[in-house]
Image (tube, rainbow, N blue to C red; front, side):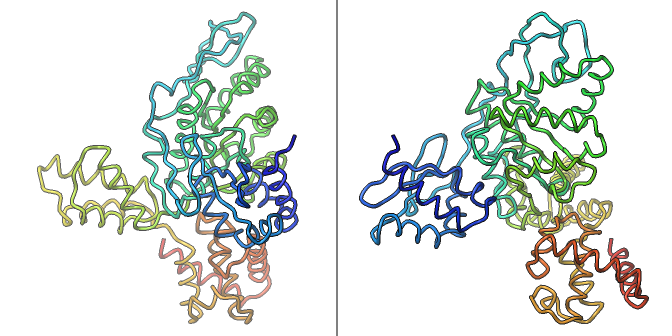
Length: 482
């Protein structure tokens, strides 16, 4: 029998569903559970602190009106936030959701009963997934790196959504609306780290679950071996028994039709049986090429969360965390120097940190800003400069002698629209930003507008000689900057 708080929340959801998009409803309201109703105060359970903050920021007016409608003018809403599998708190007492302490013993999967051919050795780090009759106990190594945990994943505005969603998945795999969870970003921004952290979180909370991290290349090679040995069905059965499957660099399956087909069947089986799927990629689904539409549509079923370039404060925090973990001291001014000079890639920033420590140790020199600057200059000099949407906007605006603020505004003047379209076109061609990210920085446009702008620029360049001159000259300016 439906209890009163469940009935009230069900009525609220009926109203909310009619006022927002299905995707927003599935992402932000479907995971919510009603907890209790006392004295006209409805308490709802949300997956994380960030989840609560997002609701308060984006849906507060809708929630207030709905609660007042169902409970009257005295009606109020409170939140119960998941933390370490317990529920606490209310809006007046916010707190940060922390991952539990890493349990290295948990990073082992329980033995799985399945047929296996002990005579075959394919040289894989995953124990042989290709089978013949004869039950044996199979120990599947999760392939997780224990240092890639949530404690070592610094949260900032650049990754807040992805980290919060990942933590929610780690605490309730296969049961949230974030299934599949697709994490995408440019290289070196932490998507592999986050994928491992989710797997570790699952193992800490659910030691009995079978977790497996695998790269797309490893998956493909295993599938090729199964075809060669006529064991395709056994290969599929192996992957279908995984509780949490993490596939890194899914875009590497592009153009591999048979591998995509087998992954399609594995994906369907896992998803239909409430198993969790986590995928990483350099690009969001809308920009993936060479991936079958039926797979792309499934990637969109859950949540696609991007990791953006970290801001200065987050970069400093990342370096400080690494120094702390390594037990190394470094002057704060040197840490800040590294963070200010290398701003596009976490991996490169940490590489510069290691190089400075090595130079200091080998030459027995004190770590000073002067020493750090020499190392950084050599390091950055050998690193191609990354062009950003903002830098392209400035180059386009400088070319036409107009303020950058103009193309970021909503004005429809012809010359501004043209400059804005050119900025979108070159941003798509020369940056790794998603179409949505480009659009948001060019007048808060959506990805469809960016695609239309790119098509317009290409058509005009093919038909208008004076416009083609603009395109060629701006492109030369950009190439000089790279």
